[in-house]
Image: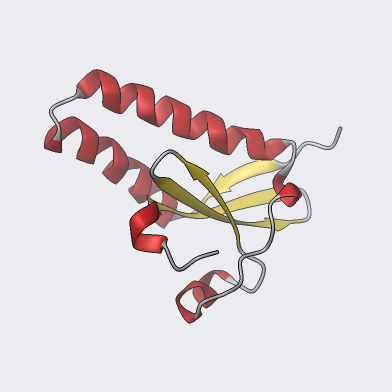
Length: 104
């Protein structure tokens, strides 16, 4: 089975911190924040084995900044936008699904 390498953009790294902080500080739930982040990262790690199984997004103009072949997966209330290049999965953004609801 082919295995892909996962890489994160700087924006995606910042997004991870924001997700954690939102749960930790807004909801005062440190254990929930930790569990949520672990689950989110596990979902992303699964892309090592089947990143091409998700369809390319029908592209709204706002997603073109990430390229033409952006794919999307969801983890609970988060949307993960990524592209696949050769043997690498490039994670562009991790954001609340509600803010990215136009991405199909």
